[in-house]
Length: 435
Image 1 (cartoon, rainbow, N blue to C red):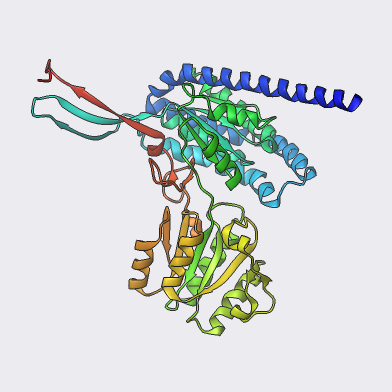
Image 2: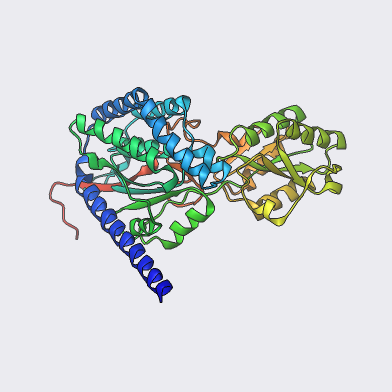
């Protein structure tokens, strides 16, 4: 009986926490909705001024941010969190400066709000124009990446939106400190703190509360691993912009410059293994000489990468046996799948089978092969003789990005300011009526 009583008490306590979080989420969402019209009308000069001030303040208060982050890292390591998530969670002075730099870049970008996308005069004299407008209240669900907290705020404010942030429990101290700083700067400039708010993260229920808050939240954007993204996309009743996982491939063609191919492979794999634009599989043309294949594998090993493949196929007894899982998933670590394919046809077929539609790359000096690869690969980004690491909003000149979309509606690839707007049609007449 004591066990049953304890179980009942625990269940009731969990239900009470979930109910409390739901009330908090809905209250914060209502507050966001109430200030959204004011944020939508902010002049670009004020938005830029606030973003610059936020960036400067983050730099000035780096010590506070790092202290909060250190607490998160200690707790995360004690809980046995995966190494790639530790890397995403960790901040240092350089990363804080980079986060602030993203705000400076966004501040300098052209404000998309009010941009006339198209327009014409109807035969009856009515003037029509299609203009960009903010989406409204944006919900962000993301894992262990404090930089997303600031990136999402900066892009949301610049595009006239309000943002509700549901970060992971592992980053709660870092996120709380960052949001406190951003809210203080907003308040100092006479703007509502509710332009950016951090949602509770003690239970997963708060995610569901956010993604089903129709009428209060206009769009939800998940950013993280496959599990998080799938949970949001399948559970949301609010419109969702899907940011996808990155099972990215590099195909080294028989006509590739081998030194170039190795350089972009090593960069794509090792620059930052924990991010979604990392090269996870290298496809080796079966026509490559054995010495060239050996050189590719040796370069990977020298860079500290563990190779998963077929020992007989690759002519290398030291590779880890390849499994189906290796072909279907992101490693997010210093591991790579190496597979021989019979030319461009087999490479394209392999990519069609296993790609997540994020970024696909080819190394070749054959312009016909390169063009066919670009034409036939179904991905948000295609790299020809360049590293997969370039799929990044900052590299595209967008400033900070909200994520990399692998869907085909509204936004695809790195998306930032323009993609955080919708449009409306404005028709101006002089009393015309329709016959």
